[in-house]
Length: 207
Image (cartoon, rainbow, N blue to C red; front, side, top):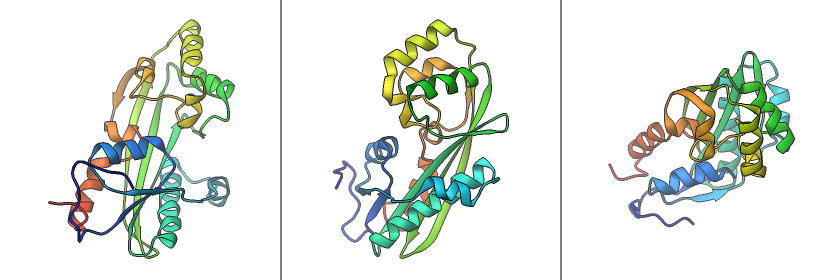
């Protein structure tokens, strides 16, 4: 259970985050939300095969729904949050890189180009998705040098494999970009403000 500075009322519904993402946990903790985090147990590769050909926004939405529903099956009565982020660039969909070498090649492809992140969030309760939202951000990478790329990869190492973009905007990844158009929380993987607004209407947070 995560302790928070702004606690919900005692009668508020339990909040569960069905995600192993450190970034999503950090965002909820930073917002003062009291929640329990669990692994969603969703086979993302199988879902991607199931919806092969779907666009980036659709894929993010389906995965967020599946994670929320999977968590809901293990947490009766709770409001279970699922989230997912996809990255699309010039017709290509990117997954989290398998290793540092794959991250380096992904960044080499993305440099000097604009790509789009879609971050979806869904909330399920007792096996039903009761709310969902998706937001997009356009990210334009600068044309950085091979020397900068080599140094960046050396400094960041395995952390590059923890995000779909192979960067952490809240850290050294900020140096990769020329321009960003979109919500900061969306870029970090969770459209936080719409989620907080919905949780208030659901009685899970003080209004």
